[in-house]
Image (cartoon, rainbow, N blue to C red; front, side, top):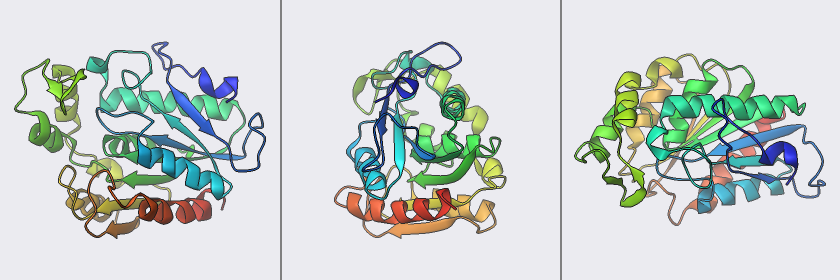
Length: 251
């Protein structure tokens, strides 16, 4: 991994943990012409099996990728209590700044769950994103937080993870955002929604609502019987995403 990708810092100076996967056959030290940024959801990090599998699938198709952990998550600097969608939108901007400074002009983004909401918020205002993929993407952000974590006291672990305490900062930011439907209507680039119809964390309806808000323009792949983490269906998710990215990122 090259220095230009492993020393990315956000506006607060927090180092973001990243993993660069070059296209198969490309020298690891070379600068790719195009790259896909891959990001995680709430209480998660860049090393989820489905994100690694996607990076490997992209590499096999001749596309480089950069998996990132947002500040406060995984091995990145920062406090989890300060990790909000709004802050992660800014983190993503810092990543894109670093990539464009390295003369990479074609940048795609794939976000899972809350990372999907982050992608919509960024793509609506940043024309450096050439194509967008939402994996089980969160759309109704406040409703999700209340449904999954609203019963917790501040400081209680989210998803049973002591390193991920529920915070007023996250709740307030989710309430301010509400949903990303207004931003979905303003996403100008090719957009793919991939969602399992057995997702009990972020329901398929989120993707259906996003597609409707965007005037039906996004492509939609529904994976029958598949849950939020693509259990048993990671290859199907990769097969849905990789050809689509190859077609739109390099066009």
